Length: 160
Length: 149
Image 1 (cartoon, each protein chain N blue to C red):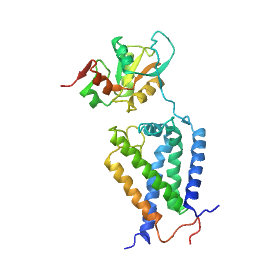
Image 2 (cartoon, helix red, strand yellow):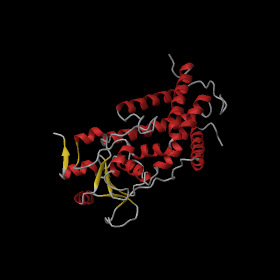
Image 3 (cartoon, rainbow over the protein chains, first blue to last red):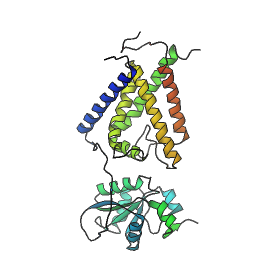
Image 4 (tube, rainbow over the protein chains, first blue to last red):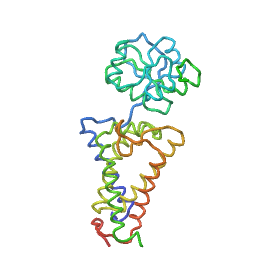
């Protein structure tokens, strides 16, 4: 092999990195799956089931949850929340305090909808995973978030 | 003054090497946070952000080490040029789509990271210039493998 060829050198470095990365992950205490799992889209909303749930929901499904008085969580920073949020949504604060606030209203097995700014933001999923780790087991991520909700003109609280 | 000879090349190598090693550390320690940071860019399909989060930090670490100790400098420099082009592309498309996300460049924890912006693109262009000097260097001092000419 011609070790002077830059492309071959680059290839060697990539292959070594690949193996070190995979092996270290396998040996690590906080290892991650090789492929990230996406949250699945909910097909039908069955609130009576007791099975743990972590699903994404559409705008219309979010609206129907809203009409059933399901608790909404705004995963964005406080400044965005203050400017405008879904009516009655809970503000995202320090996780422990947030969990305490939720549990003062409902139990961990009651449904929760988490949303953030727009379909591109990841904060809603991050918060949903944090809540799942904390024992909440009926979690719905509204991917459309504030962007779709406010565009649809659904009930909101907006700062004047 | 010829930038492609003498101490300038060595300084460029050392700076790039140190930057890439430093950039790799937090990512190697926190692959899950880095995977999320990559996921936020919305450029990779099929959940590949996890695989990239496991491999990319080690490429950064190894290329950085290679530049500093003078091993396979050409290959390491090509990888650094490639990585910076990819970074610039990823940041630009995120900015163009108007999504405000954390850079995931050096610190990947949710508190400590800086956000993407024009300054992160300019920084990457700066690294490209350093890599350009190293790649087109005219002398190979302090390089051990492959053996210098």
